[in-house]
Length: 99
Image (cartoon, rainbow, N blue to C red; front, side, top):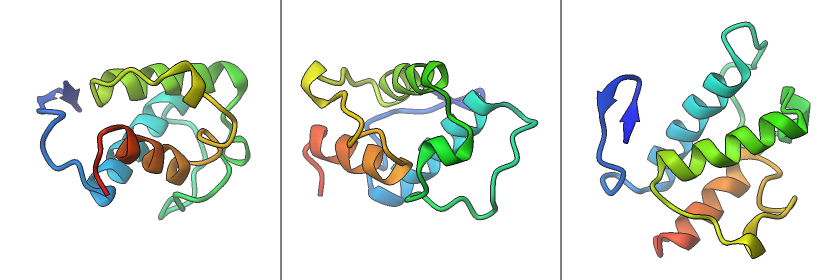
């Protein structure tokens, strides 16, 4: 996987803080440079309040799968798991078997 053009091994640093920072980078890429995001970005803020439309949510989900080299099972693609970056982080940690 690539993070900002730098080769990145998705198996490295699979901890909540690392996953959170990678999710923030993905969200910023999906929303674009003009997005008015709070700094620091609260991971528990509802994604729709950050300007994530349904189309951007699909793009975010696909980007998460690519970034973390993971396939999210259909049963886990729910509004509860994609409510915020924090809920996506918990989903990823659960799917990767990390705590």
